[in-house]
Image 1 (cartoon, rainbow, N blue to C red):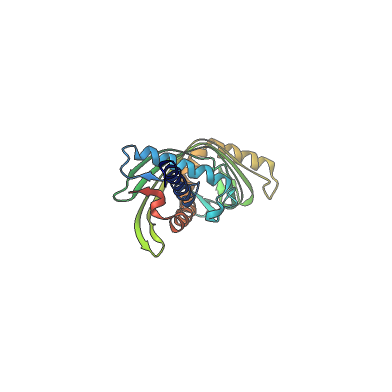
Image 2 (cartoon, rainbow, N blue to C red):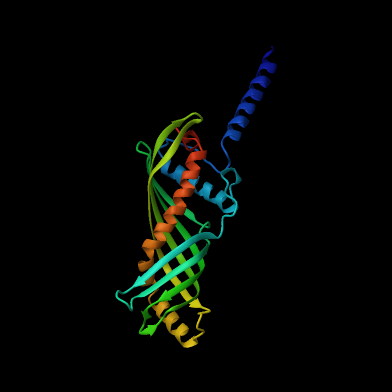
Amino acid sequence: MDKYTFTITLLLVITICNSLGENLIPSFLHPCEKQDPNINMCLTYAANNLASHFRKGIPELGITDVEPILLDEINLALGSGPDGYRATFKDIKAYGVSNLTVTGVRSDLDTLQLQLTFFIPRITVRAHYRSSGVLIMVKASGGGDYWGKYDGVRAKTYLRASKKNLEGGTFLQLEDLKMDFSVRDIEMGIENIHNGNAVIEAAMNLFINSHSQELLKEMKPSIKMKLLANMRQFVENLFERVPYGYWIIE
């Protein structure tokens, strides 16, 4: 084999190997090198790359219908005693969650701990509600439709994982997941109340929008529990299907 033929053959081999390597790692993943001094910047880029694909759906992971995000039920309680106000929101549909940006990642890859911060410009919500008790000295038992606009949503998520060796290679296993969030501006209200009393509806909407942050604080434990259940399902699905080496190159 002459020098020219050898060079061409070598280039072909390198090209084929690179193509095979690229095909092994799905486009929705961006692996990062563990020893990279800018590992957190790489992980932030990787997380945003995953998020951009998530918006369009990731068939390889069985993710097709991304929005709306569905929550079955959220509860609100104000006051105590027989006249304490209670509301249950069901069939909750949230839009805009997938339009998130990962603004930063802090990591400890030796212990497989990650802290991610997110920003979502706006989340809109629709739901049905049932309520009982007294609100602003008005008997507020009944039901109707709920709507909400949540602008400037910031969230922080912490996760800890461990490695597990399977027949197909080394995979990650979720060990712990926590999250918290805040909302800059909130508009929300009720409509189509069952008794059709426009005066009560107007009074309740005035109260709701005047105390939106306080109401969100009361609803937060229920919201976090439901969101964490959805997030856990998503992360566990990722970890079960994607080998560790596709995330981190050691």
